[in-house]
Length: 201
Image (cartoon, rainbow, N blue to C red; front, side, top):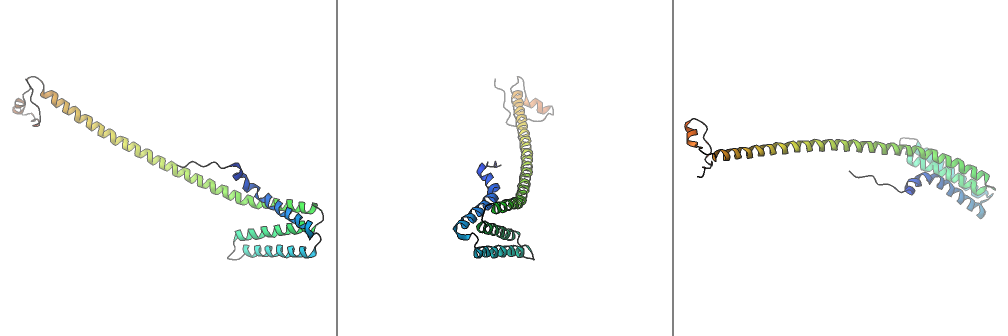
C-alpha cells in the first residue's frame, strides 16, 4: 500500500492564508488607487459601486433558480465584496474605514472558507476510512490464502514423507536375512511389487 506523502508546511499553510492575502491585496491596491487620484472622485466611486452591485446581482441570480451554481455564486459575491472594499479604500481619506472594512471582509472570507475546509476534512477522513477498510480486507484475504497454501504444503510434505518411509521399509524388509517372498505368497500374504530387490549374498 502506498504510504502518504508528507506535505511541506508552506503547502499546508497557503490555503489558510489565502483569504487574508486576498483581502490585503485588495486593500493595498485600493490605497494605491487612492494615491493616484481616486480620493473623493465621484466617477471612480460610482464605477466601483456599479461593478460591486452587478457582481452581487450575478451572485444572487446564480444562487437561485433551477440552474443555480454555488461555485459561481460564491465567486460573484466574493468579487462584489472585493470591489466594494477597493472602492471604499480608494475613495476615503484616512485608513480607519478601509481597515475596518478589511477586517470585516477578512472575517467573512474565513467564515465562508471554514465551511469548505470542514467539507474537505470530512471527505479526506471518509477516504482514509475507506482505504483502511479495504486494506484490512485485503490483509485478511492474504492471511487466509497464506494459511491455505501452508496447509497444502504440509499435506504434500506429509505424503512425501510417508511414501519415503514406506519405500525405506520395503527396501529394509527385502534386505533382511532369510526373507523369502515366495513363502509369503504361499502363506496368502499380499504379493510384493515386482520391483522388490532380492537380497544379495
